[in-house]
Length: 187
Image (cartoon, rainbow, N blue to C red; front, top):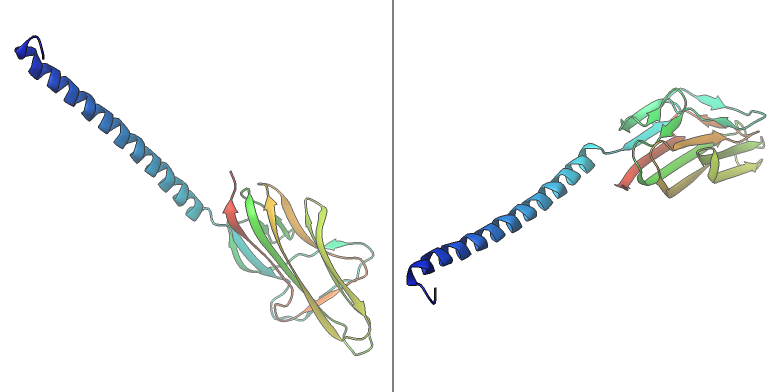
């Protein structure tokens, strides 16, 4: 522009085009980031995971005692979002890696005062003990316990509740429960 007045207009247009191109590229980059965040949020909403099951519905039913630990198969399903709980095996197969809240409640009725009460169960992940509750006595006719844990789990981990040997559970009103839900996903 300093030496030739006629080239000054072209120089200004070229500078303006360069600024517009930079602005366009920056805007495109910001929009791509927003689209990625929106896709992630949508994926988190559509892949919600939660289940809640009980040992029995309203029928009075006792389970155990056995000589060995046995899996508890909860056959009354309140909720099974994500399809991770298997009613046939009693196992929750983790559909997606993340942090989960898992809760179990156990209840038993000895049948009569002075009879042995043995309400015991363990929470296991991939066959490994995570938590357990044991109540064996002849003082209570009925007793219950609750276990709640927050765990980092990987996709395909197997979560189960076992009845411990020589223990038994009785139920007729949704007292024995097994529930879990995804707090947040982990990539």
